[in-house]
Image (tube, rainbow, N blue to C red; front, top):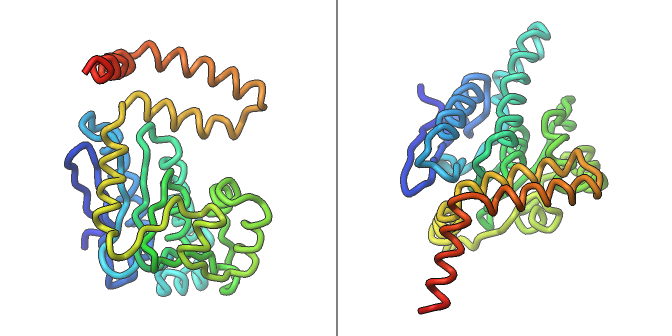
Length: 254
């Protein structure tokens, strides 16, 4: 059974989680498939943006209960291999030079929420839900912590991780877990418009913007400003920048 589907059109590479009968639960096979698809789309010169979506009612309900049962009764090696596979995906999402957008309907909980949070942008259906309920089941949302803490801050992350409660899309947006909540009535139209809007931007400008955004995590204010100067100079030396300036001149002259 294929756990994901990948496609390309209009500068957008799409990855769909494709096991709705299992709530798009993320196991090692799906994590490996996600990593391979992300790597392939990163290498495709026609793709400027990657969107991660899902079949069925839910984005991802986390980890399959049968898998958790097997891990509880099995050796630590199996759990380590599963965790390393998901960890590789989370690191890849941040390391890719192309922006990645999570398009979330229904529930994104557990590893599903970790996957969405690791993406650069999260567009959520107004009825979507997000949560990290691992603590309620004797587990720890350990792989989600690094990206969650960066997204919502220490206090909000602690409350979400320690309570395990599920957030509405509106509350998830308020704490910084979601970029934008999209109304149900216009969901398809608005999401497509947002994806195409990003995909129309300069590939080099998108890559440099994403690189600097996350590089700032490791820099002081002074070093961050210095990196900004270097990035500005690099961006203004590209063909994309020169073409953008020419478009502005043409528009002004018109």
